[in-house]
Structures are given as structure tokens and as C-alpha cells.
Length: 264
View 1 (tube, one colour):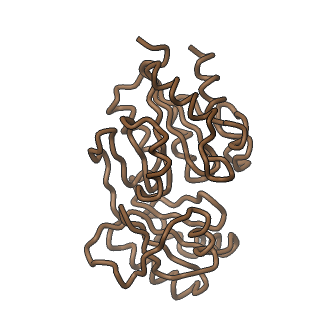
View 2 (tube, helix red, strand yellow):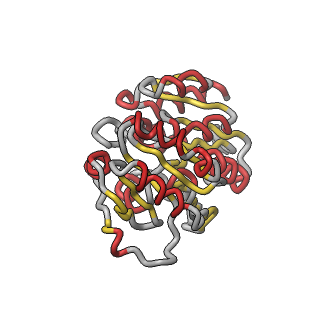
């Protein structure tokens, strides 16, 4: 029996687990390894698709669940799909309306293993560089291939206008933002919070913790039994969490695990 038996910790990646150079610090790795050896379960919960997390997952426990695409796609440690929640066909109505009314806004469409660039924008190009990911031209999209997330990219004030102008269509979906230049749309039941509940149920966990820094983490932080945010988190996230820990550049995960241990 380990001291962390029955405890699951879900962590956002960018701005939380990863430092500003998109690396997992040795301190965080050591803390996660100890957490797992003592019976805990550490899970990543990210807006990224699986193909952009492979290099990081090699440094993390292999048998833990993974949450991708803001909860629209969830796998257990053996690779079994726990949740697969693609967008319905009504998403094209939203895409067409935004394309007509906001022609400067980009649109990225996420399948499980591809990111299709439906319409480019300067913010989409920044995203490609920031996440070190490759976009696939939408001309290569195969009709019927499930799409799990639509990410609209643009200036924050423009995305705020979309939220207001297209509120009727957005109400059919889960809409979140991991950064001010993104508006990330998933199926209504797809969220990191719902993924946390699924994982807690599947693992029969006694207590679920979560840590994140931005708007797409909100549902997960609210669903957790105890929540953390690194000091660099958005101000509205800092206001709602149970405890603030050190910045992502100062080993936030290691600090969170220290706090969990103190609570035992």
C-alpha cells in the first residue's frame, strides 16, 4: 500500500506541466515518478491531439489515462478508448457563419491524429510554431472522418464578438479558450471536467485533484475534489482554485504533489 493509493491527479500541459520552453522539468518528473510509485495516478489533460503529446508521454507513466482535445477523446492506460465525442454535422453551420461574418478568423479542425487547416490566420501560424505541430491542408480531409474540436483563431476582441454574435449556435457546444487567441469548440458533453469524472469512476479513485492555468481547464478544476493553479494562471482561474502553487517555470506539479502529501 502506498501513501497516494486511490488518488488521481489530472494536469494540464501547456503553462502547467510544461515550462516556457515546452519541457517537463526534472523536478516534476521525479515528483510524478514518486507519486506513481506510492500508488497515485498522474494523468495529462490537454487540448492537444494525441500526435502532439508523444514525446512528452515517453517521460510520463505509461499506464495512466490520457485526456486529449479538451476531453473529446480519452484513453485509458492500455490504449482503450474511454470517451470519443466527435462534433455533429451542425458544426458546419457555425463554421460557415464565422467564415462569412469574420473572414480574418482562422479555423483549425482536429481529428484524432490530424489537424486540418480549414482557413489560415496569423494566429494559426503562431499556434503551429508554438505547439511544434504540422497542419494538414483541409483538401486532404476525408468526408466522414470524425472531427473532435474546431479551433477558431483570431484577436481576442474578435473572438469575443463571435461569442456574442454566434451565441445561439455556440450554445449547442462546449466553448473554451486555452489562450486569448483561441476559441475551442467541442461537443457539448466533451470537457476536461467530464473527463475527470470518467477517470475517477473508471479507476474507483477516492479523491481527484486537478491543476490547470486557463479557461479550458475551468470545468476540470471545478469538478475536482481539490484544485490547483500555478501562479502564472489566468486571473479568473486563480480566483476559483483551492490553492495556488509555484509557477510552471518553478516546478508547479512537484509543488502540488507536496501539498497533496501534506493533506494525507
